[in-house]
Image (cartoon, rainbow, N blue to C red; front, top):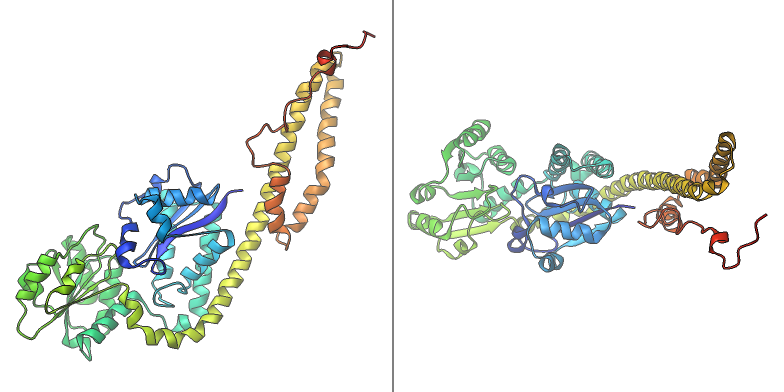
Length: 440
């Protein structure tokens, strides 16, 4: 049976410097799976890149992950994780509930999971198994938000960025800071809205597409600028938050160095890079008067929040397990149904193969007699299969369904490419014998 699996990297397995090598920017990475998976959904955020798929085996999924992202297989294995079946499902449910995030309970991940599945549907790479998996994951995430304290007090990456500004910039309120946001996508929108909500009065949005910058500026009461900006203009900001989808640096060391030279005496420039891959050259951190933080710093800046929220994790984990039980029941029922269908198909192929062998040896039969023989073969197969198939249906959704779904195909060799008749057709013994019996 095809299996559900997830292969990915996240903040748990590697830092931003490695994680950014797994980020994808092309419009349709699923087109590069080369038939390795029958269903596929990519989930890409600032903290993770994951491929959820339905494939014949886990090795196919791991190979597809590395090849689609153009990453050497050995490098991918070193930093990635691979989970199958219920473990893969539990992982996605925890991701959707914000329990696997760098900032536990962050509220942006549920929307990112929803968009990842919607994009797969648009590309036509989803399918029945991943559709049910993601629907149940979204249900788990919604329940965590609605039924637990984690959900009632959400946090986010954009909120963590604002916290970094307050903690590292020394401002009591952001109304005293001049902030530039580079980018106009979903993350930039979240950052701008959070800064606006925290009282930032001097806020500017810069983007290569000026129309998008103007649109976000209208939403947040900010000024719009076309990117890039001259170094002397960058120097007028106290802080710059960059969160574009660019494949390379939008702020080089040289550009930051030029901006630092234009800073008034006693002023510092605070840079926060929320992009994956990174927007700001990491070497900029060594420039005098410049302070650089990236997405991984969000974990340390909200440690107090994590400790306060940890007691609310257990109820959220219980919700995940409840949703997982429902998904496993559905999956087990589906596996049993597939086993029944394959068992009937295989039995019919065997029946037809044996008829093909037998009927030429019964050449004297009339059409009605041939029909009786064919009907006899059908009735015999149906009666032999009746009780096993009935027992399989009775177990669907029960405790034995997982075991049967796994072992019935193996017992009856339902997923092999061998001759469906179970070997060679019986030979004509009279022709094969060195001493054939005398004619009647």
